[in-house]
Length: 258
Image (tube, rainbow, N blue to C red; front, side, top):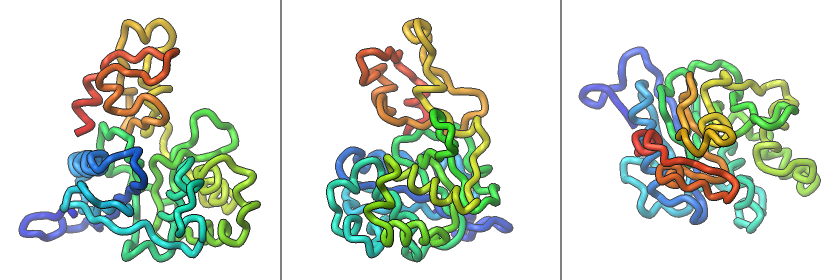
């Protein structure tokens, strides 16, 4: 938690929460530690940084680690294999209660790069604010970055528990389920378009230009989202992860992802 002089919180500023979740082996503890440091450089108000995880080894002791909460839903609580796919276990962030967290909570995926101030994210007043998915027209949100009140959306989990398995048959992944449920309640809003940008869609050059010009930070961007391939360490080296996509080495990712 960041505090003011002598351990006191800065006057007039309410402490907020920054939350992430780590399961399995796809992302190591270094991703959590880097995210914590990036938040520390880009958030001026006092905050708790909490990582939900079943494996805290290697995570910086300065980071609060809490178990991924049991939510009374067998597949999640028993860690059935399918819940590790397509982000489904992220729904446990909506648990009510969510350990001892209260108040505004900014969820951040581990595979992001923060390039500008985070404070404006906490100025949003809507019940649930998320990225508007770039390649869908139905209002689906991309849950790489979302703001919510801790414990305020437990009804989404109640719906999952009472309606499973039919409740998940209409959707492909966690973010379609989560944002679709909250959208149908009229409680969903979106970040300003420029704040959260896709590395693949908005930073990389298109066509032949990608062979001659490296990716750039879009004007107004605060967070760069890495989904699929490449991931941040690959982008630094210029490894695309796909035979059909060219990515030149990207030094600014190295400068920010630390």
